[in-house]
Image 1 (cartoon, rainbow, N blue to C red):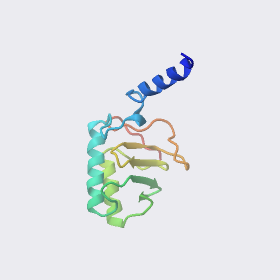
Image 2: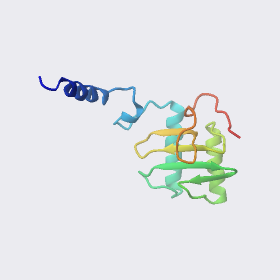
Image 3: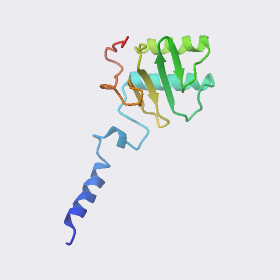
Length: 135
């Protein structure tokens, strides 16, 4: 064998692609989501599509800024904003200066506080546990 290191690296990369330790590597549309996260994801997508704020297979980005709520960088009308603030509050998500809810087109949901460059600050918020407000 002329290149054992190359073969070992290729084999390692092949097996790492099938590892469950890497959430970003999951190729199916089912993730290790809690029941609360799945319910929130499905309810948000259903309501946002019904209100024509997003398309069926579009990614969703909900951002909090002071008392406003941005959905894919658009401020919804007053009654819709109140509706979604209430819906998120029911699921334990309080407003915070850097709080965001991200739902990818393939069904992954992430909730947390993000900086201006889209980097997660700290650990993501998991529903079903106490959710602290960042106010």
